[in-house]
Length: 99
Image (cartoon, rainbow, N blue to C red; front, side):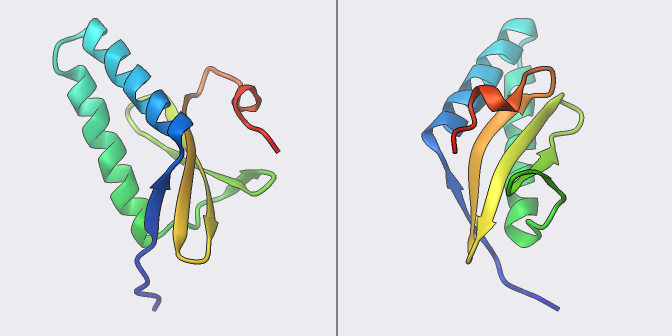
C-alpha cells in the first residue's frame, strides 16, 4: 500500500479559475461560493492521497467536483499534483491548455 502524500501545486490560472467560480456562485446565491471553495479544498485533499484518476487527454487527468459542474485538470509528477485549471464542464479545456 502506498502511503505517499502528494503536494498540491496550483498554477496561477487555476487560482483565477477558482476565484472566478467563487464569485459566480456568490452572485447566484449567498454562501454558494463558500460551498464551492470547500468542495475544491476537499478535492485537493483527495488528490493528495490518490491522484491517479483517468488520463483524459495528453497527460492531463481530471477530477470531477461533484455536485458542481467543474473538472480539476491536473498532472502528476514525482511527488506533486500540479493543478492546471478548474474548468466548467461546458467550456473547452483547449481554451486554456498550452503545450
